[in-house]
Structures are given as structure tokens and as C-alpha cells.
Image 1 (cartoon, rainbow, N blue to C red):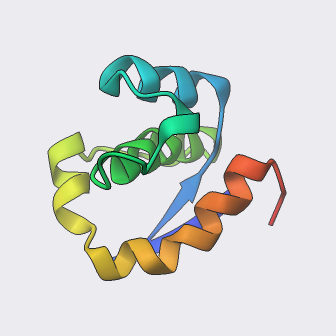
Image 2 (image 1 turned 120 degrees about the horizontal axis):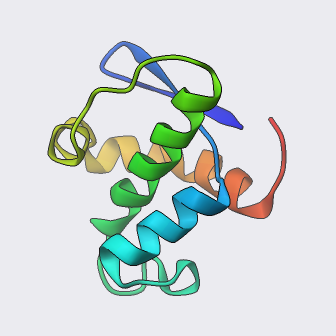
Length: 93
């Protein structure tokens, strides 16, 4: 698990198998192809990781996918990239 901060709130991220499956079903994109065609899919993956992480921590996660996407900027993505890399590599923070 890892955490990120967006708009003053902390969100726990967890790369669960369900989150990965949900992402692939929602986008039709495999994790291996992530980022090759559409950078907007990265926040979608983070959305599913946040849902899984917040659930694991017993904290509410009430954001819709659109609300989540609207919070994340390209600057945020640059800061989040190392965290995402860590999660996908299976390393604990």
C-alpha cells in the first residue's frame, strides 16, 4: 500500500487483484499497455487503487470516477508516478 495527497486529502492506494481487474474491465486496457496510448487511463487506475486502499483502511471513499479525474492534474501525475511504479512493482512503502 501507499498513499497520495490530493487537494489536501490523503488517499490510500492498494494494487489489489480486484482493482486491476476492475481497471481492465472498465478501460479494455491491460496494465502492460498502460500509458502507451492514453494518459487519461492512469488516473482511472489510481481511482480503482484508491477505492481498494481506502476500503482496506476502513475509510470512506465517496468520490465518483469523474470527481476523481477532475481532481488530478498533469502536475499531480508527475508527482504520483513514483508511487504508481512502486505499487505496480509490488513494493511496500
